[in-house]
Image 1 (tube, rainbow, N blue to C red):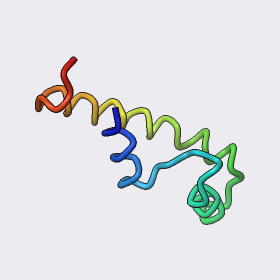
Image 2 (cartoon, rainbow, N blue to C red; image 1 turned 45 degrees about the vertical axis):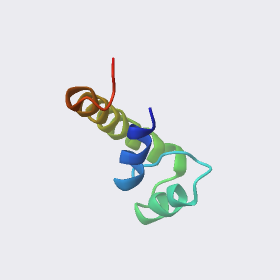
Image 3 (cartoon, helix red, strand yellow; image 1 turned 90 degrees about the vertical axis):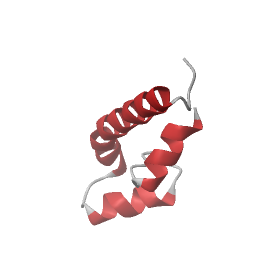
Image 4 (cartoon, rainbow, N blue to C red; image 1 turned 180 degrees about the horizontal axis):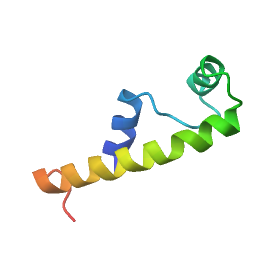
Length: 63
């Protein structure tokens, strides 16, 4: 289950408040961190689902 994590790191959609890039991204968008997290979670959910689907189709992940 590391594939979604790696995908989201490469897409720079990390939403954890303990990550400094979250504060940088929120600052660049002129948002506070909770607002930024609320907007980023749906994007991360979709990318996680796509990575799991592609991994299952290609045989990397055995479901």
